Length: 348
Image (cartoon, rainbow, N blue to C red; front, top):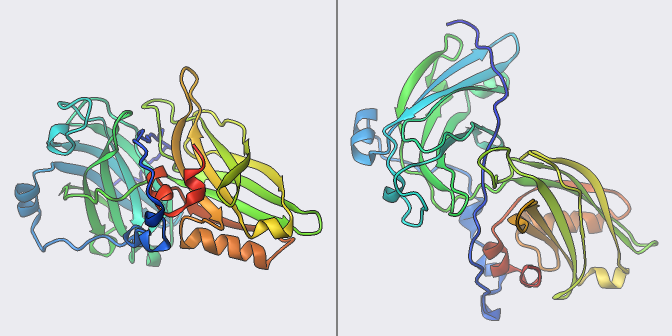
């Protein structure tokens, strides 16, 4: 097999608008965390042959290639095409277009999902052609311990993202040095899984000055809102005292990217006494040029945090006052945040 010449593909993704349901006070509890969302391990599937999977699930097949380049310590994945994808009405009754999908692929080397990559979106087809290359810099010994995950998803601007199907391939079962192409049948995906992207934040509290600094560093693999051109993300940070919004500040808009680099600092004046009852609602939005901004995802830090990772980041900041503390956070749906955080409910 000839060495693969790869290039960086445009990446596309989307965040649907969802109806907001405000929970009752009794529903807002740490006990309501959906703990299964923190489990990134794939579910076990029955031991079926490829032919049996194809006949049982009838989700189509995907054609892809693999090759490990020893000189650059890089695994190259080529996403070639898919065929016989089921029409949207088989998977999601809320789709606007019941006859055609807008498929794209998301590629990860499990258990790492933070460095996933994705193809372009192919419009209105059940037989998409990509021929796109993706590279992962990883030592050969380590790549043999990884599992290739390819998610085939259906882009829809006005409805939820639907997982058409997926494949899992343990890379120790493939001769990566020799390389080659293969067809694999798609199996059902996990409908609960949300890929809204991540955001890197740094927190720093200066008690003598009574100032809380929030550095918005960058985002990664944010949900797209446009089928072409990616997204135009910005971040809004709202200071909440108890359950009352005090002030909202926002970053600049980054054009046509789902991997924005902000490197912007936002500051709030907060006394040490106020800090213990303070929350920060961090919301990522897509800037609408001809319409309202579209919500992508959010997290909440502080008193009414939205999860274990958010509480950990806030605790580290309190323990390391005067020193910046940075951490990646996975964005959440607004409804998920509202279920566990009164601070989220207070912010539109």
